[in-house]
Image (cartoon, rainbow, N blue to C red; front, side, top):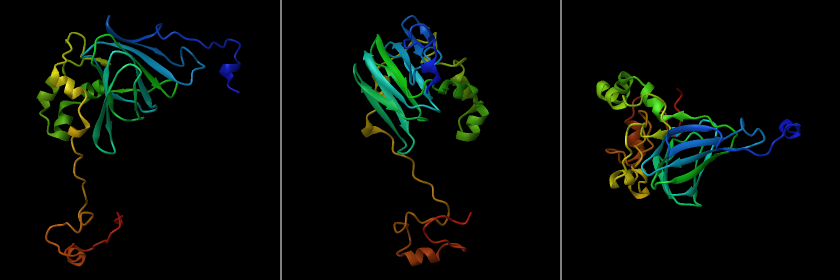
Length: 237
């Protein structure tokens, strides 16, 4: 038996307006209802108000799946699918929903003023990793080492990110939603970038028989440096 349900102090109601999670300004803010406020709850949610051009910044959750439900206005939701290496984007109006699987990188952009959404989780409390923290805490020299990004230019680009940003852009920067940004907020699946070509270690012939210069498997195998390990994997690493 759940001790929460058998407690003499059991309550089965809560008010998401009581706890403000994040307030960018008077029109753009997030409140919440989670287990700390309502111990009997088996889910939890953020109650979000946002205007056109405001973004729930890129982030991911390590322990929960998330459902986005639109009450009023319109949003674009986008999630990075790690299996297809593509972005999956949807425009949602009142009554419509989309979901973000656990651990998948995602964001939400307001497409109308006075937009109202709920983001509902399948556990009472979500863990959140903010993209803003990743960007501001990663040294420029690491970005240069990893991606050949100019160290000084990177540090200049992320300089406005002084703290965790949940509703962007940061306070003091006006949101902008021209046609170009609106398209970026909800790219067409047909124009999504193709995944990068797979990397095959030396000697792996998954691309056979289209490998250039070899008319047959025997010729291909004979050309490999010794020792040669035939398909299938694995090599004895």
